[in-house]
Amino acid sequence: EVQLVESGGGLVQPGGSLRLSCAASGFTFSTYWMHWVRQAPGKGLVWVSRINSDGSSTSYADSVKGRFTISRDNAKNTLYLQMNSLRAEDTAVYYCARGTYYSSLFDWGQGTLVTVSS
Amino acid sequence: QSALTQPASVSGSPGQSITISCTGTSSDVGGYNYVSWYQQHPGKAPKLMIYDVSKRPSGVSNRFSGSKSGNTASLTISGLQAEDEADYYCSSYTSSSTGVFGGGTKLTVL
Image (cartoon, rainbow over all chains, first blue to last red; front, side):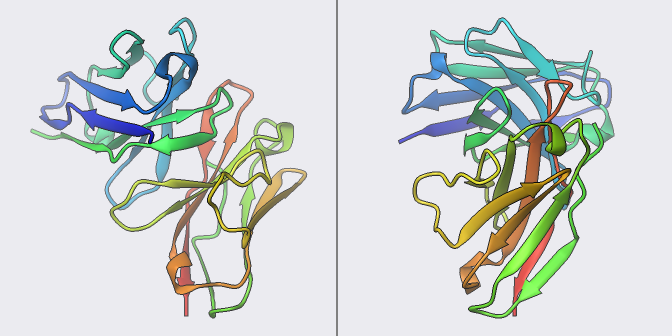
């Protein structure tokens, strides 16, 4: 059974940093593209970032480009999202997802809540 | 990276069929056969219902079907059931090598 478990969310002040993690199990992590998607409270889904299987290729939404960095450790079956210069509008539940390069997302974690507030 | 356009809400009675549209541009929906649809119940993670425009993942009911014409994709749910009441989101690959979601559609089963 595929399992994706996010962690690292919490309350952070504007301008601060946070690193999210996503622990994967139940599949061969090193062979899949992985994605981050976020959802602000009461709002819709927003695609954030993707990374290829070996970490050599990444893409970002314009809203986070230059502030967020996606990475992975295939030895630890873990996906990361480093978030810097956080803004109030980054407040959301962040989901990691297993998918394809063209962003079909087959399996999702339960999400971790990030709140940016002073 | 503008969001795809979906109706805010649709409704139908049990047993009926409904269709949710998803309109993009030639740089996303119209340019690739990489449209997906997701179902999300309140407080839950999204679930993939349709990928590659019309393919169903294993375990998804054949009451769910997808199609595309030009820059508009559609999700049809036939034989509506109470458990289908949820939010539905479309998504597409884009020419910028990113993903983009629609704004979401709330389905109410009357």
